Length: 448
Image (tube, rainbow, N blue to C red):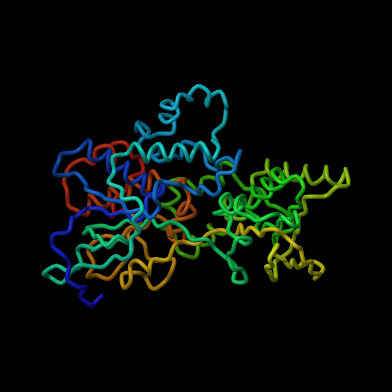
């Protein structure tokens, strides 16, 4: 990090924390900062600003399918594992919405995705954070002090404004994983945009859909299309022989515990990667057993009645696609017999997962050479060159260093507390961390 950044306007506002993105992870951090500031002396308060490219808060709105439920229990909300007394718990949300008793009578730990999205919007609207919606971050550049150390960052936004940050928290989220052979279009699109794109389809000339993927999202879309297009065939294409059930048993679920982050981060890399591979069935290319059984029952009844609409293209892959004026031809090859069928479809939905958003476009020379990065502190601070004392924290993209919870909601509350603790500790403030340390059982400092 030898090149000197260009001169920076000294009149720019300065913040202790600038958050890139304002999804659930940085929303949890904003709440932790608000609760910390409410319980500490004015000189110990943390100033923060968040920049979000969307015009308003939203969490995967294209996947808010009717009836789809969360795969994590509601206590793994924005705050409970860090501060169960917080006003931002899912329970308090239910109370303020007038549904607490009704939800308890529902006897479930897993709210619908619609309800959890409403909870997140409720929290985003309630927190007193400085959030600039409709403002994308374009670059993060280091600022050197008189001693030649980079102790601050200049964060430039798409609207031409800038802010100085002592710490940057990257919550840019995930990118859609698109197969190399696929070109996104009106008829070929990722499941992340499903509800928006399915409503924009032209006339259905073929009454046939193909869905690529073997995970929960793929199965949910298969279920949705089968239920909402009663005249259409739905072809589920996946490389496995059949859908595999998600392992949500109590012992396996411990891989999502806050303590598991300590264990995995401190373990030898070979063992950490082995454990992540062993427990892939808790999250990747797996489906809730109830949904598997429902789809199997539908397929079986169609076999009984003799009118097939649901087809499982097991041990198969899509080898090519070709769009035409009235549809998209999808060539599906079976790995079992080597035969290829070409399906004339109205749409191909790619439920092919996500990959962490790359850091280089925003961080430039500050970005690590390897993506995702392999050198990240226990406090989620990116390891950079010795001449950088300002902090770059990662909310996501740390699975290989911190475990499976890196891109999931399971650990957002605890991680927010740990990042805030690190920011406060590194700033050299003395005193309690109010609600963060007093009520966060799992809070850690950089020294852990």
